[in-house]
Length: 470
Image 1 (cartoon, rainbow, N blue to C red):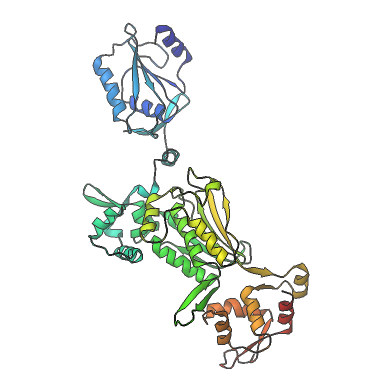
Image 2: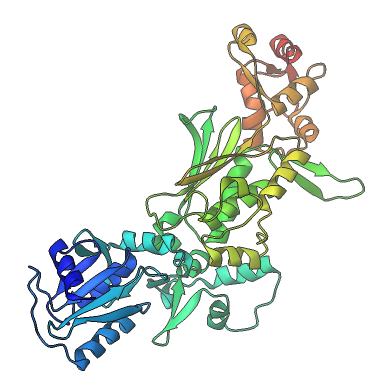
């Protein structure tokens, strides 16, 4: 760089790509990381803020210090030192845009903005790491989760039960080998994946790990029939989600020929729901603390939503064909415990199970921030003309089966649920029989003795008329 080029730079003044420094000082590292995190730039050593040349001699010690400052950044920054003119005593330090963003110095993370180098907030740092694909939330240590206080051994035992393996090493060594625990000054510290899977109160430290389950009456978000928040360890949360879905969906029982055991048959296949729920937990963006996974049940559908959209590098067209993991540790733990496969074929399995059950393929609603998978339920509603005839009565598949079964012969409660291959429980009665009674589609043969052992139910003329029009 000659004097003319130097003078031209000084005339331009400080800007997005240019910084003046009187001498080698403690702020130099900040400028290095700011330029490396942005689009690169030049630091002129020996020039005052107003553009005057200081004309102070820079010795070899100063130049060595410049290299040390660049090397001590994290990651280290490659620089090029150019002496402009020995008489002027100005050094130009060229910093290229970094290939391993984000960079930091002892003072923190900085970004060049206009004529200044500004410190980044925690959220902005997360975004920088995400953009550079160098940050994994589940790998970050959770220093507040004291191991001795919050580790729950029962969660590790359950993990090995699901994995169908035997634990050989001590708890601490096992957790370390699972990649969920590190040692800091000799003390065991969980990372965020470890907190989610193996502590008593994950939500204390990761409040966005809460999972909200809601059962709505009808097909819109208006009247809530049931709701529950899950805030336990990951595997317990999965159990509790299915307990909620069990009382919100139709679950029948199938007895195989020649066997005494019975198999549950869910109206939406259990395996498809499980795949979607695990995906939501494994692939959500946990950096945003104000959002939760939502499991919503409507009369006509089930929706499972998580924050984060598609993982970086995965397009909508590639959904179900390729896999990209936002939280690789969480995915690995689910894989080790036999909850999922890591092959990126989960959505194909979901569609296969839905097809076997006679249901349409899952639908998706995706944008930059949210990902929803929607399962359609077998839901029937009378058309507009029939609504006028039947005061808007709607009829589920199980309701139709009950009306048909009781249309000619009075049936007991036990007979009805045996026919439906469902358990004779109050929740099933309230869900499938009681609405028919309230709508006068069936009646009791002994209305004065509703709890009589001899009670039977028979379809009314209104019920038979509605059945005929279906």
